[in-house]
Image 1 (tube, rainbow, N blue to C red):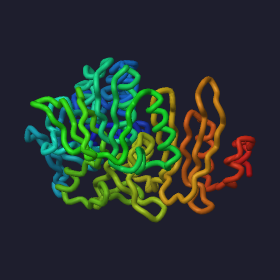
Image 2 (image 1 turned 90 degrees about the vertical axis):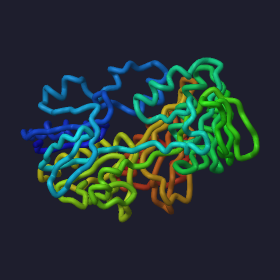
Image 3 (image 1 turned 60 degrees about the vertical axis):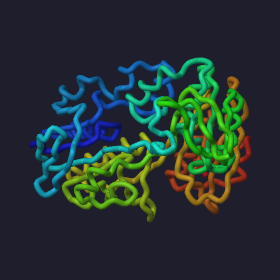
Image 4 (image 1 turned 180 degrees about the horizontal axis):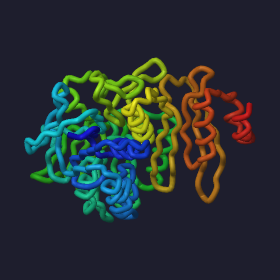
Length: 407
């Protein structure tokens, strides 16, 4: 029996158990993870870690000693087979069961994979989600090799940037009209299209994959425009989906993820959810956020509510991506925008600083800032404060951004 059991030892799960102890919770805590390593950061996997610029120990969210020192029973390499909400037990793959007083699901998300019918099961076809995924593909990243990146979202573009920096021949295929179409304005897409082309990558938009070819190991690809290319390996970055299998089998409500109320409680009052796997109310809608910031913030609110705080989670969306020498920082959600204002802050230290400000009518809803931390921070504070500066002032590089906060 454990007073609180947390299934999913990623960013949200680690944040949740740490917050419980920070709040002086003295009951028993069990954190269960399928991977054989302690909780670690995922964002650097497709960037610094893949480049060989970050050691494994630096990926860990906390030292391995943190968990025993705080009396947290961390079970790594452990798979939960099912949850029984009536008996309030979880059953492990080996048949053992563990009772709980309260349960939190921080199961995260799973990468979409290519079907076997089009070659998705060939050797040399990789996804980028776990430490094991990246370790498995690391040897492929060598100068002169040919990589096909399927999907022009952030994960695919980050992997492409690493490959290009290592002197590889990079081809990116995106079946939509443009890269980043689902998540960004045409201006941001154009910025990153130009950036990747400047580093020698080939980008094919409105082109999909028909099938991968090869005997046992991928060696080529046939595209929907009828062309073929030779490849040494493939990176698949075609999105993720919430990991809801356990919750669904346990009879919990599912709605674009595990459905929770504003406090992170599922349809079972003893079970909570946080992070990538959870959907929650936001400004009259129901959303699910795939970000480190959300995983931490939501998990910490859930920890408080598991102890009776009765606190609503108020999301403050923010995201980032590193590609080559460009740091993209995003504040807010651009859903429903109808106008984009460009602010060009010039070049400093050889880096171009530019930001794109999304408006829905007269309301500022999001900011994409490239190498422009000031625009990001100001935009984030404006959005969180419910302030919408005059678009003309924002677009004028002579405008002092900080002055907008006082207006």
